[in-house]
Image (cartoon, rainbow, N blue to C red; front, side):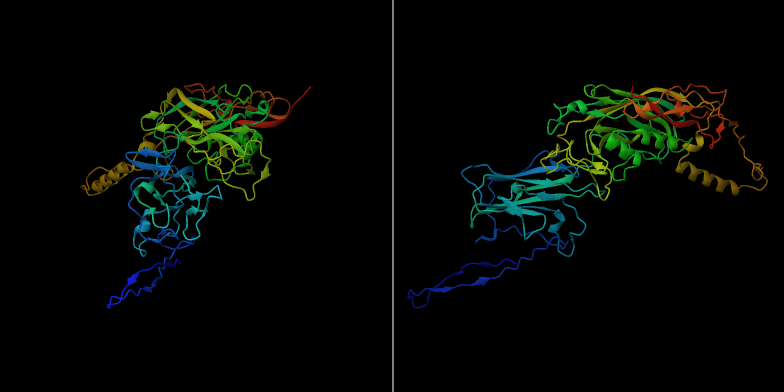
Length: 549
């Protein structure tokens, strides 16, 4: 409750005597300020010291400005979960301001109190770093105000935009400045309306994942990971021992829609955890191989060379295949040193309505596996309790020890570039893809046609129906697995010596294969001419040891 007192006037008697009677009227203004508990109401930014209850005419002397926000078609846009710098300033140094308040709110707060509710509305968070000049308001939620009465020519406040969500939340940042208890300002020059930027982040794949791919062909791709992490591009808190810097092997898979290697907002698997914390990918590789299947799970294991200082900028390559069942790919690359950070892409769609994607390149930024706590590359590691989900590293952190201190994703230079390019396309000769290409409209038309056929004359010749348990199509022959190939050389996680693993593979016997699969022996596909024994293993693992001497 704010109480404003002021003198209403001077009253003289009818006799003309110069008797001045001071009538002091106390006007109690009940400004009900709704607290952070989600109650409706608009913040009253009238200065507590003001003797005038209406703002002065805005002559453009004072302004509110937001840095690094996207401006397009006269609208200002924010990216979710990013840090922005808000600045209140005067255009005339001879006209400083003494008091201020800045509020983040939903523009719908202007509606009738019974039509609007703050509940479950995320308008972001205002951050004050200098406690001597600014503080969090005690009268309004999501507000920051002056902490002293000194003259000011500018003030910076940081705003962290709303978290990722499906709601396209609009946020209004509204400011007030006061020169003294009689002159204060609000209005358009001190207001910024921000709309959610619904465009994809720069590291997003060009196409969204699709459940069904109707391409009647297979394709071979090359994926190229090129590191960009360097002291020049990322100078803040760059590791003190660069000779120990490095990337892990590039580990990934081509896979079906229902398979997830890693995903933002989901818990990290044990394999991803080991890759992110120790740059060791063997557990993740085994998990990928274990999910290999003809129409689900994974198809090809993607494995590129690891790169350490001073060769971190050299590209790491891998070849893989995709088909109409396994039409996406995902990869992950660990970073050293880091608490549990990694680079990568998840569910990169290669099947488009125009055919297999020809080529694409995206930047990569660090992700946090959520298993270890640490603000910088060389932070002392402590286990996250409880375990967090996979998310971006805290870009825009307010911790000065962070390499991403007060940064915006748009300001952050890529830590790597990922390029994928199509090499070959193989038509599925003799395969029947028409069933997969049938759309819902086709099914509806077919149902209508069947209904019309039932109404035709009885003497029309009926089609012969197959007997029970009989198929119109001839069953495909079973292709038994062939002989095991030789064991591969022993491979360790760090590429030097110690405990490692080796593999051996075998193929299914089918003399009618019309193309050669030599890209990856761990991903031998089945021919369209036969079915495989799902219980037969095509790859085996065994532990081994590389002598260090």
